[in-house]
Image 1 (cartoon, rainbow, N blue to C red):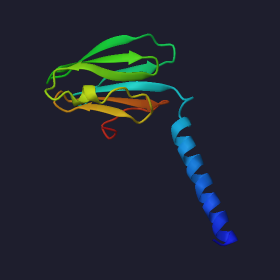
Image 2 (image 1 turned 180 degrees about the vertical axis):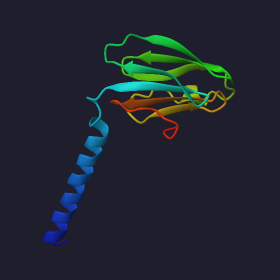
Image 3 (image 1 turned 45 degrees about the vertical axis):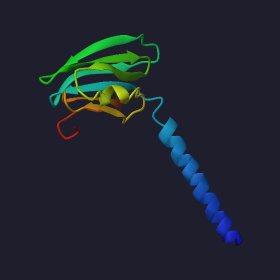
Image 4 (image 1 turned 180 degrees about the horizontal axis):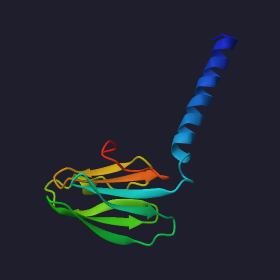
Amino acid sequence: MKPGDKIILLLVVVSLVLGIGIRLYGNRNSSKYVVVMADGKLYQKIPLLKDLKKSIIMVKSNEGYLYLEIEQDRVRVIDSTCPDKLCIKQGWISNIGETIVCLPNRITISIVGGNVSVDSISY
């Protein structure tokens, strides 16, 4: 390996580590919200706070319903009328950009950051 190759390899490794760090920790300080969409319309927007106590929310759509559990800065589906229960198996989501989808009930649960507005193009 030539000295120039070592410098290039070092730059690639540093760039990779910085990229992963920004992805994992870059959005931690911004405000986060749970955006619940049912039948393609905004159902509810809930702020995620570190000191938020555990709460259960029922989300109804024309096709069925599900129950969300929100705790601190994360959310999950704990019960649903869908047949395969994939939305329950998804588990907890807590990072901006993560989404749980329940196709049979036509419900999506997403975590968004900051003052992001929800529109028909987003979903």
